[in-house]
Image (cartoon, rainbow, N blue to C red; front, side, top):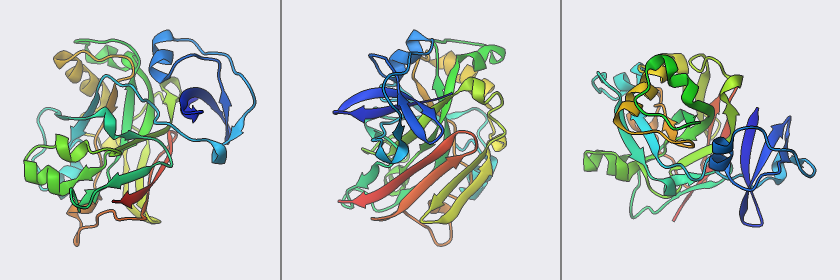
Length: 272
């Protein structure tokens, strides 16, 4: 099933996706609360067409957003980076979260090299620590689309990635979470990024260096994962920074992350 968060009277509400409409559900809480509770809430009210929905980020209160660098061979090659022997881990802050159809915004006095990165996001479904690989997938609640927006001038200038990855609005996430039972094998999905109608990234999740069981097991050995935690699993080749010439997002651009069987995340760009 597909579960979404949306805004109603400035409050987070929950809903099921049914075809091209959203059906509100009876639940006093958000996605993290629903994951912790388990079991499907009841439907309530009438369905709403997508064009009338104000989407919230698929998850709004993760205890952490964990991201992976260079987890696709083709992206490591285009960046002239060495293939990592263990997962290359960094963090994004929760202030970076926005939803489907929201604006990615930035101040040109802070950054002028803002890049896109299409990524499959994993949403953790239970508390897990030091789990073996064969049990790791039991910890997955579901999947959603993410754009690991990156200020390349800050990222490369700092020599580490957190600041350039964590500016406000730099983690679009959504439109919804597809529960894990709908995608029994997440390494068979087409993943794409489209900028102003131009295909920029066109790859496959099977090209990940570290597959999800190994990745979740590795992360859980170093820090406890909690319900609602988000893992961004890396981006394939085609990002703007390593094109010749480079392609960066600009005011008025539309960027789309589309992942087979997961969804289509659309955002526009606005500079200050």
